Length: 95
Image (cartoon, rainbow, N blue to C red; front, side, top):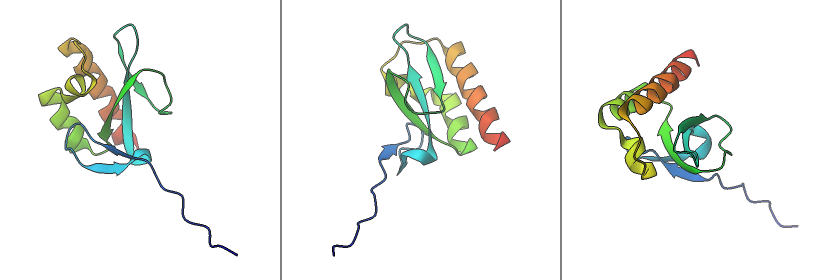
């Protein structure tokens, strides 16, 4: 009988620190069709997605550099990015 291979975990890259990690260890931000950025806790919302580490240092670095917008090829306002990054930072600190 053949041995069962362990299931491979999908890998994604953090747009802030550029490290590869398992998809489940990252936070997904989605650009919706109407141009708004939303936090995607399920990782299944339609639209273009970008990933961030759950580490507060990566999120703070993103606050300074706005790399999510670059990763999503989006023209979003800085205020939207700051609000989203702060929301994600609060969620990470709660866990």
